[in-house]
Length: 90
Image (cartoon, rainbow, N blue to C red; front, side, top):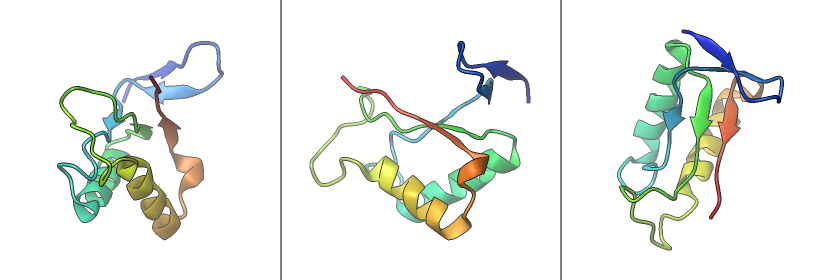
C-alpha cells in the first residue's frame, strides 16, 4: 500500500481510505466491523466517518452510526493506535 503524508500534520496515511458514511443506513454493524477488519488486513488504516455525502441519506435514527460502529469495533478490538479516523462537518 502506497503511503502519503497528510498535509503538514506529520501523519502518514495510505492512498486508500475506508469511507464509513453508509454504516447504519446501508451497512449493519456486523458488516461494518467486517469491512474494518478487511481494510486493516489490506493495509488501509484510514477511515472517514463523514455522513455528509448525497449517497447517504441521513435520518435521525441512524445519524452518528458510523462513529458508533467504529467505536464498538475499537472497544472490542483495542486497536485505537492502529487506525486514523477523519471526519468533516458542514
